[in-house]
Length: 147
Image (cartoon, rainbow, N blue to C red):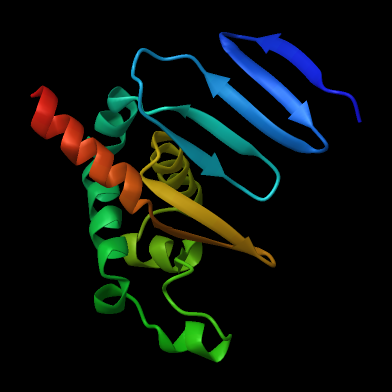
């Protein structure tokens, strides 16, 4: 399959054998990779996206819940399916804990994932979210160094 190069709204999209890498040009030299089932996206860490994600109380609570999921969620349901919290926490469980509409929680999780704070994994029809500790560490170092 030949390489495809396409320019789109200040980002470059490269396609190689059904693998996509979207490059977002930023000023920072640090970067991380967002990975999903169908798309791999690489961009530079953008602190303003992380600040935005953390500006909401519920999103900060989700980060806390995902830091120690065993304290906030029932792991037995996961163990019955042969899973554990290393894979993450199901969107439905996060939604039930937050007490908000599923569409609101999905929007919050997407914002946090786009900022690099969360990683997701889809198993069957369920999506599980976990913290991206590498990005969180990079952001903490950025705060300490820059502010």
